[in-house]
Amino acid sequence: MQFSLAGILAVLSHAIPPFLPLILAILALLVLAQLVGRLRGYRFTDYHCRPAAIVALLAGVSTLWWLPRLTGSQLAFVATATDWAALVAAALGVALLTWLVLHPLSYLVRGPRRH
Image 1 (cartoon, one colour):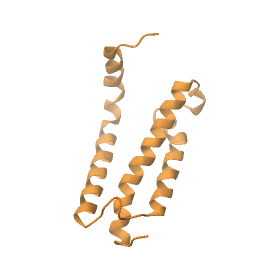
Image 2 (tube, helix red, strand yellow):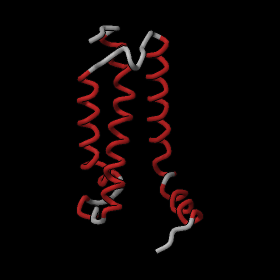
Image 3 (cartoon, rainbow, N blue to C red):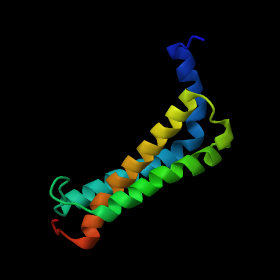
């Protein structure tokens, strides 16, 4: 089976629009959390928050359950290695985005304590 760039873009042009408002809302939340945190003194390397990391990990693991439901699929339909790779990549992405939002927010709530 051969995939062309035009074919991939055609599939994406039909798959993304229903989720575009959700994607834009998440992007706005990420930018807002980072911007407000940085304006108030947050620095990525100077602040550590274990609860933000734990919540991000739980969000990533929960993706394995709710993402197939969100897309109208089932976990039983995730059969090939490519399907699993896409699901794991989505879980890692959710975990990373969750951490990138919660880390500066926890700084704003807890203050500039250093561990």
